[in-house]
Image (tube, rainbow, N blue to C red; front, side):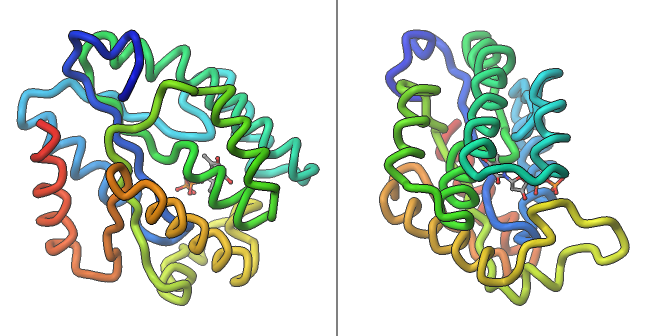
Length: 211
Ligand code: TYD
């Protein structure tokens, strides 16, 4: 975490995991968690939307109810505000490592890119909700759209986002990659079409640098 008063004197780090649905990020969060724990770190694993009691209720609404795109963006940031207050900031203040399955880059990708919400509004929300907090590292799992679509488990009921069409995910992916180009010091793009072993080797090399 950068530029935050709670940052001083702590060794905790904040890592977010991003990528379009089906990009494979969930598989790798467990690996990074175990790797860090094996290196003596206390890890707090969480997710967005969600991660708190209020956030999980908002997640239910967000993943299953149709709503105006600005309502959707505001609720994503409402969930995030609660997540920061209840989970992320206290964990970092304790010196723990926080691994979050998605953070604000997902709002840019999905509500900004996918739904087309004005990026200036997204930036205003980001400034409002976490003006001094950014992940120390964001791992962006990137795959071609057809690979991501093929990975979505067809045997379970797809949520509201997963039911979107290919052009929606193409726009999400483009926005993720635009953010990665904008913040190259924070966002690392991982080619998620590689083998799991190759990805794990890359993840280990990247995360090791943060220790
Ligand atoms: P996801 O993280 O993919 O969970 P699961 O692996 O259980 O399906 O689901 C969260 C969905 O919420 C995902 O489709 C992306 C979407 N989302 C947004 O649209 N904006 C956001 O700011 C966040 C955090 C998530």
